Length: 205
Image (cartoon, rainbow, N blue to C red; front, side, top):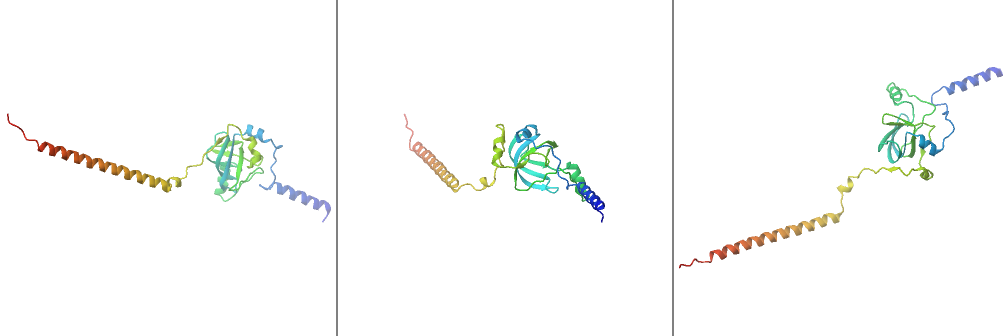
């Protein structure tokens, strides 16, 4: 094969690969410092991925810290194309991709820096500073950050300590005994009053 022909094939193959969705690398601008990215973000939070869809690009997060914006305790984050495009492609058995898609891993805890929203779904991509959380990120936590309390565990109420039952039982016995004693005393008093009245005889003048 002639060198020019071989070179042409290599160029053509390289060009075709860059056109395949998901193959090309994200063409992100120069990385932005975390503080600047947070300042420009739509919403910022720390949370753990509990579920993913669409090849790990649509993630369900359980939020434990809200740094910025209106964020629910359970929130969806889309790191891929528009959600409508993802759903339409899935309906016909296809997948759509962009070069800036971000994927998430179930069980990982992230600092999520979302650039926008689609309804209640936050938007993210590979070009953001979203990352697995580590202690180095603590320095960027704003004073206004909100810690989200976890839901109450029903087992706390289903299984109270034994001492609580014992104390309640003792109090119940004491109340019952006092009530019974009071009732007996009242009956005895009334009987004694009735007997006293019967023993008094009227006198004639």
